[in-house]
Length: 309
Image (cartoon, rainbow, N blue to C red; front, side, top):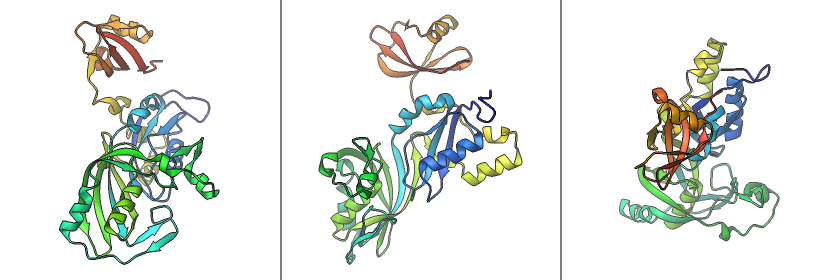
């Protein structure tokens, strides 16, 4: 890896971080970036400070594919505390209301959960990073500014919503969902449907796109690697190849001549290719060259190519 300046270096790849509780996603990103001394880095969708778990971090050329990870489905495990609603819909907010928790049978609970599977409408939490006129909602809320929240309703998809454990005043849930889903809103809405209110007490992301918890590194593990090997070789071994984020896309193998033309930004034509919005483009020895779009007639338009020098 070549150096950029006296401190920052060019680093390319993806690191799956197990984000610690109490830290924003950007704070976690900056800590890891400094460990790698990476010149360019970005995360792939913010987790609340309360939340822990899978946060893919992209370095160097991998940042070109951050949006694909932002758009990917996610999975979570969460504990919803029943009987208490809070200003932020999680345990960090001020309590707004306390209500007795009714006795809820397994049948009644399943009937409620069933209402939230599939395509549903959600109202994002007032205290969220969703931007209105360029400002995050949480900043507007803290400033006491009024926002037409009803206009911010959105449709999301809940692919899985399963009960893991039920206590007298809590529910542990497994959730798989589309991008843009707020687990805080989901838990709050379930609490409202149960007639007692609820807020998120624990939230752990277990998957983001193709990345899962077994692949994740904690900050402490990464810091230990730097102490054990100041050359950063052990740290760099934690990186996944940048194409890991796009392995779900169909691949198109190119000849050496076509690969050369592609890297010069030229369109290619390969008969019989089916039009697709995104495909992986591979050169010699299965080398990942970037993404392309297949247009009608087998024309390949290069998109997001990897820098080779």
